[in-house]
Length: 308
Image (cartoon, rainbow, N blue to C red; front, side, top):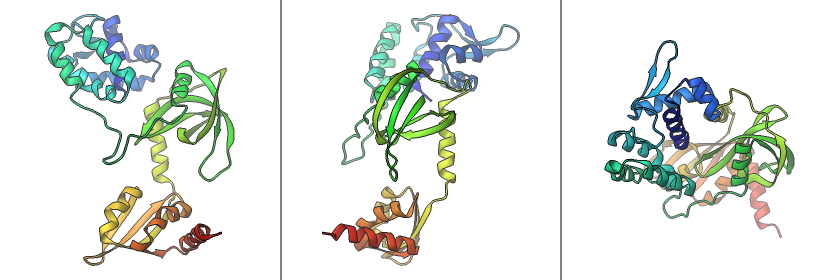
């Protein structure tokens, strides 16, 4: 759930006094279901947002329609800034927006809000490593999503030659430091890794996006498809001491201890080729039992490494 969208929801409520989920969805260009979830999230976070039943009802922020946020109590402001604060640790624009929101608060509890905003920090780098750089084209893609303009992308999948596509950008997702673009190509929903884009050219063509498209729901569908996809499987006997390190390389790993020093390990990846490439560097610590196709791929990789 995007912290910036929650703040936008709050400001719409303060500006209009009372809105329905449908009106909020139109205002923020989201689905009705997303608007309703955001309203419920604000209410659960302690912000005084309540639904009003009956004719002329909707969702209302108690305390009146105040665009300067002065209708919030100290506890409510602290809850809001706990939601927004983490984004400011990784996004300079979010940090700037947060400063402006703090200045809009009554001075009596501005200090509490500032403390809440700084209570959580997102550090995208693992210990012993530097933070991954944002891939090229992320800013251009964000601009295309906001302006709703088609982009012409040259894309190379890991096992294919580069291709050029006209993509209707619908939204961007960042997961574990990797950025993905969700969009439409010839009417079909597609997902692309941004770091595999070789070139990007904005166009003036307008984006066609389903009226009920919701980025969070679309990303959940992508995750479900990945989880259900058949994956290549390898069985290896490994030194027990290296199994924790293998867990960092393979997102699917099952371990069965053989004795104090050895483990039988089942590993999965998208293809035998990806399994072989990931296992080649661990040759002195494990033995591949099956499948035979993986043995063949490892031999091919070994021959390629020593070829003159």
